[in-house]
Each structure stands twice: as C-alpha cells, then as structure tokens.
Image 1 (cartoon, rainbow, N blue to C red):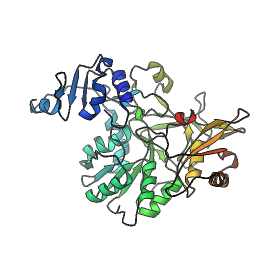
Image 2 (image 1 turned 45 degrees about the vertical axis):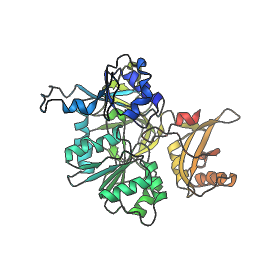
Image 3 (image 1 turned 90 degrees about the horizontal axis):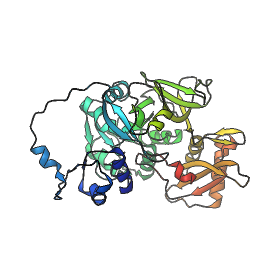
Image 4 (image 1 turned 180 degrees about the horizontal axis):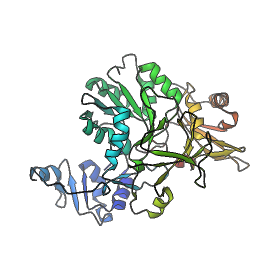
Length: 423
C-alpha cells in the first residue's frame, strides 16, 4: 500500500484490484479496517508491525514460522508477474499488468548501458519507491548490480535528501525535477553533494534552465529521461556525455519509437506528433479495463498520450500531453514550453499551464505559478512574467492570466494533475 495516497484512494485501489491478500502496516491499514466490507475478495490481512485483531495476521510471525527452503514455481517470461497502478495524472488510476520479463528487459536495455550501476554504488531516492520510476532503482536495478539502497521512511524534503546523501556518501540520486528545484532553493553554502557521480530525473519534464542551474551549482550530471508505468521504465533518455538540455534525450536502443498523427501515420521531421513505442517491457494491458486498454494498445504499439517532436539529431522534445495541447490563435501551444519559459524567470519556483476560456469563449493559456521563497505576488510581477515569456518564446504562447498559488496539485510521483487545475 502507498503512503502517499489518501485512505479514499487506498480503498479504491484495493477494491478495484480484487486482491485476496494484503501486506501492509498498522498505520496504513487503520483507516481501512472499518471499511473491510467494501473488499469482498479480501481474505488475508498481513500487518508487518504486528496486529492483535482476530481476523488479521502478524507478517513477521508467519515468515518466521515458514520453511527455510521453498521450491520455486515454474513460470514463463510472458506470464503476468506484477501490477503497477498508474499515477492518476489524468484521472482515476488503473492497474497496469506486467509480465515476468519486463523488469529484466528494462534493466538490460536502460539501467546497464545508461546508469552503469556497480556494487560500490549507494542509491538515494527522493521519490516514493512504489511507482515504476523509483521502483527500478530501489529494487531490481540495484539487486542486479549488487548496489546499496538507502531506504527513507520520512518525507523526502530537500533538507532530508542533503542529510542522507552526506551521511551515506551516496553516489546516485533519483528524483523528480520539482525536487531538484527545491534542493537548489534550499541549498546553503554547506550543502555537500561531492559524493554523487550522477543524478536522475523523470516523471515530469526537466527544463533546460533548471538543468543548467543544477550543473552550475553542484557540478553533478543530471540525466532526464522518459518512461511510463505502462512501459515499466525509461525508453527515451539522455546519457552521460550525451545530454541536450531541455530534451528527454534519444530513444533507448531496443525500443522502437515513433511520432504519429491522429490517423496513425508518421509525422514529418520536426513536426509535433503523438508518441508511440514498442518494446519488450510494454505492459500486457489494464486490469479489468478492456476499453482503456484498446485505446492505448494497437498491436505492438503503445500510445503514451504524450506529444513530442524530434530534432534532426534524434533528440525528443516534450510538447505536452495529448489532451493538454492548446490551439491558440491558429497556433499549437505547448504547455510544457510555456512552463519552461516561466521557470527560467528568477522569481518562479514552479509553474503549470492549462487552457482557459476567455470572454469570447476562446481558449488561451493560463499559468498557475509558485514563487520562490521571499518573493511576493503582485500584479506587476504577473505582467513581468507575461513579458518574460513573450521574450523567451513566440509571443502568442504567453499566458493571458497568471494565478499565484502556494503549491500545485500532484500525484504521488510528482506529476502535475492538470485536470484539477482545468476544473
């Protein structure tokens, strides 16, 4: 069970899965105990830190009473092995079903050539390890390499990350761009990241300005990549010695990547298209969601729902989600591009852009902006941000409205929930 979602969301995931057994903690199970009647399939509740309830079992007691040696169940590479629930960035989460081979496929094609983990590596992860991106680094990538992982039961604040990296002399840091932006803001003169050899970013686009500021401040490489829950891990990525700031990188060898139009035909070079991929780690489908599965799986091709363009050197540039792209004054406007321009302003910590209808019932960009500590919101600053965007990218992209806020709604993996902002 995930500690980063609410009890209501926990109940939905548990009921939707139809699970017969659950392994959880007392704290996570407590809000759901009175709702057990909502989970008719659930027969076994195993609590890792002990339980005295008559219909629950102490996980440690059961493990200690089990035989020391067990026979492995024979499986095939195509058998379903594990499920991952999607982050819910576009609505209710779904269970993505993965095969036995998917983890090994991701490790061989991405982790080994791009990360090069060694037994001497120590990994610190700033993202919850129950989702696909951090799951790889904290379990099967590390296990395969014999590397060490620092497990953090506390909330991954910038101060906490600095402490863990310094105390354990971590060599690899895994996080989302938002966390790296917060670490930059919180970093004092004594912030010590000298033990790190590499940082990884995913789950949301890494703006070029943030990348440049990180490199300038800490001198540590920060690799951005693109993966999805449905594809297990990264299938597009920058790599050491081959980084193009602001891009998601190039296709990971072993994955086929295409940009297509609404009819499924490849778009012209340099044009924005829908990103579809094919590869051995792509999921088998969504549990109990045949219609949703049919929408995104077309034969061997999985439609990610992302809009990208590809430059002449093969680097992919994020342009937004398929349902986020805005048609403004006859032009396609990429929310991600506008957000990148806003974040390059020294007053801005985070930004999210969505479509908003004006008095003429025409869609225009609206920006939700989180300011850096010590910066006060004002009408003049809003005007300055609009002018900044106009100067940074094509003027028609600028946000017609700027709303300042204390934070942005996000999923457990740090993805902005734009559907909430649109509401």
